[in-house]
Length: 73
Picture 1 (spheres, rainbow, N blue to C red):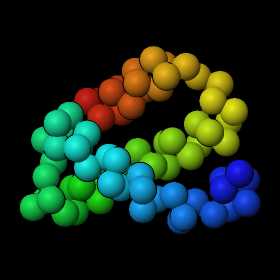
Picture 2 (picture 1 turned 120 degrees about the vertical axis):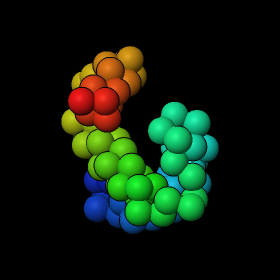
Picture 3 (picture 1 turned 180 degrees about the vertical axis):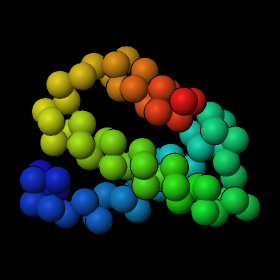
Picture 4 (picture 1 turned 90 degrees about the vertical axis):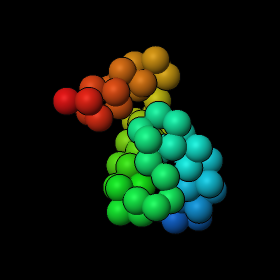
């Protein structure tokens, strides 16, 4: 509903909180490297929004593979 109404900014704050542990554990990014953290936050948020807007056509496993390939290529 928030995405439909173009209110993504309302959910990005909670997304940042949820993603901080993942950034540290998966990508090795901590709060000290704020630009790298912002880069990953923005990229992952944009991918999640696009996935939702596309009616989540891809499975979670497919999205995991897509993101992995983007990050590691």
